[in-house]
Length: 151
Image 1: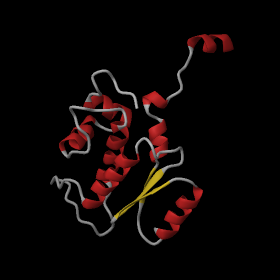
Image 2: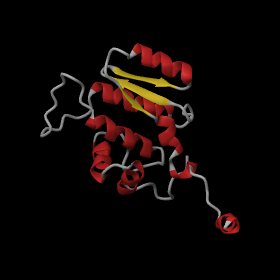
Image 3: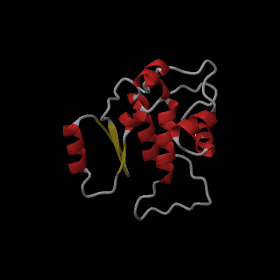
Image 4: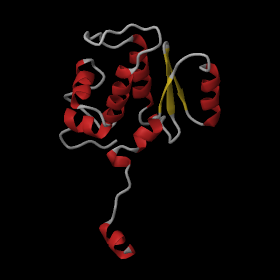
C-alpha cells in the first residue's frame, strides 16, 4: 500500500472517500483511523465509516442531535474491513452488514449464501473490493504519449 511521504491529510482522505471532511475528522476522533499516521487504505475505512454512520435500522431510535459513538456492529464491521485490507480483498469482495455484525464474502457462492442467510432481515452491502480498487495507487497510470498517439 502506498502512502504519501508525509501521510494523508484528513481532508485528502475525505475527498478520496467521497465524504465530507467532518466524516474523516469524526472517524479519527472515534479511533477508526489514526490521524497522525494515515495510510492509503484509510480511504476505504473512512468511506465505510461514512456509510455506517448514516444507517438506522428499522425500529432503532437514534436522535440526530446527540453523538452516540460507535455502535457494536459498526465497530465489528470496521475491524473486519481493517483486517481484510489489503490481503483478503479481491474485486468481488464485499461486506454484508446487519444489526449484529457483518459477513465478509468473496465470490458468487459466498455472496449467495449471505443473501439467503440475511433474506429476512435488513442489511447493507459495502463493495469493499470495488472501493479498494478505486484507491489512487490502484488506478491505471495514463501515459500521455499513448493518448496522443491514439488521436
